[in-house]
Length: 115
Length: 384
Image (cartoon, rainbow over all chains, first blue to last red; front, side, top):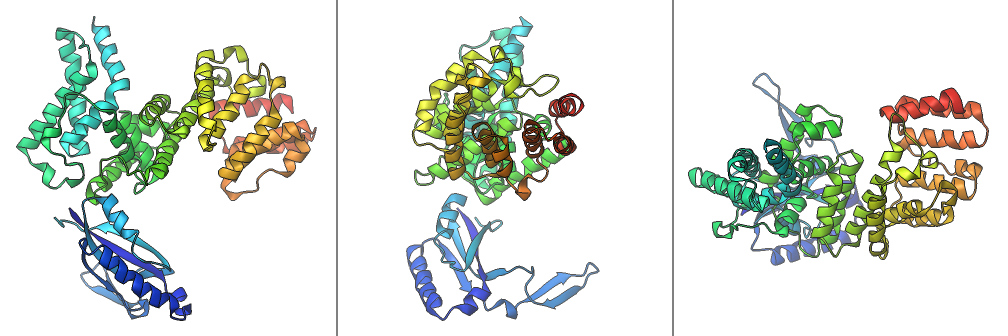
């Protein structure tokens, strides 16, 4: 078994345009996903808007450059995550495909040394 | 005697490599270790077969030697702990190889979590047993580049836990398509092993019409090779059809009925190749039939190259002027020499020599293949 981080990437502009109906349904879908995959889920959470993000980069001289905003400037930003446990990548992908992500998609990456 | 042993080992490399590696991978729990053990077994065969004679079942001999070495290795250092994806219980070790093992290996190499270029490189390396140098040559890249690509792909398999198994029934159609795409790309990259690979996939997936279609397509295409490529490219129009390989054509044609039933992409391409193969001479080509098949193919697979090939069929049904109007205007073809040579041929047939000449020169500028360049040069100096 290995642990995988499932990152939910969203287009925040689409969320901003939502009148609440997609969000309400999305909450229900996440509850259903968690109920169906409880045995595999090791953690998870919803992230606040990307406007609340602060990025830190090494300046290459032992210091840091701290900046406002997300790390990479893309339209879709990470909005939440699950940590799941799965036998192999196919099982992890099968679970990750059930993660509700109506405004974007998800990215799956293994955690190192997660045995 | 020596030559017989070398030949036997070389033959076993072509026919048995995938099966031996696949069986060894099951016990090695690690693709790199499995590869080392299989290479070692082939090296041992060169020595042992000289004194003991070539075994009746070379594949079984090689599998036994390679899996035994993999087991020894695993007992010494328990690498399996960290190499989860390929781990299997030791009692599964069999003295013989199952087709399922090869299929598992192929599906692992063609997993959608790998980039397509990695899928092709891994298939050539692990299923066909080609060296990084040979693969690099087929793809016109440096050996170090190809080596790095293969290393990255193997790391992705072991670090993300891509499983060594045949996909579930529900995933199978998509995954078969990926496998067939890879085999087709292996062929278009010029690897001689593509037809062996297509035969293997067809044997392993007897229910797949597209697997039959792909093998049929490759056989019918390969049958024309002797007439097509020499010092310079010879268009099908000018080919000496006596040079076509009748055995390959017969084998390819026999596959077409099975392939065209559900009319998948490779089935349709095989059917088009079959219409060409069945024409006694260029003038006998059934162009309306070919155009009809291209219409179906474009509907299913609207790639710019397919649309370009369809235009050639249009030129023989409705004339070159109609075809010229339908040439695809697609940025994906901006540096594709065949787009310019097709336009040049159409202009030449319309008697618009100056424009044809300009188009041939454009084609020449984007051509890296010497036979194709020689053909375009001759068109420029003599025919236009």
